[in-house]
Length: 216
Image 1 (cartoon, one colour):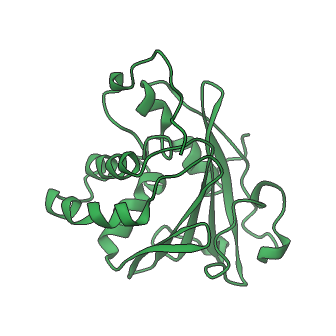
Image 2 (cartoon, helix red, strand yellow):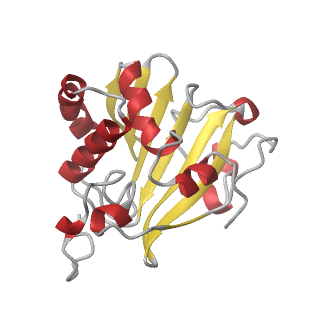
Image 3 (cartoon, helix red, strand yellow):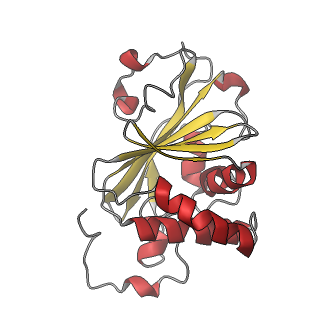
């Protein structure tokens, strides 16, 4: 994986790591600047989209074939940028989007546009779950090696999918390859809250992922 944006700005300036380094909020991780978010939502009553028919914003943001059900379709997508630099693109998929809830079955697909080491992804995710108050230190310690399994080093163009299994936990894929299955509903709630909780650091991206914003 390539190194993330070598520049004269000290990365240590940021008061806290936000949203999985470049995966979540590259702006906060790289210096506390405000990120730009772009993208467009999908109508909740859109015709169901099968994988082979995905086009446009979602052509490279579909979940693995083994995950995508015949009735699944994207709710929305967005791109996070930092001072014009593309950080990542993301899409949220679910079955029955008109009745989507954040504790149901869904898939969050992230396609990286920068390279990030596994250790940064893991530590930043733990920091965010701690900030949101959805896990204690014992849980975070137990989840750390599981996150390391779920998130390998990534390079620009790599795709990671996190799947929420309602009431059961979460599963992760690197491209089409499964990397981890974490049978812990508390973990799944805390992890996906990084994007979907109302207290997320990137409310604009949350609105686009869930189809609540038409800006873009």
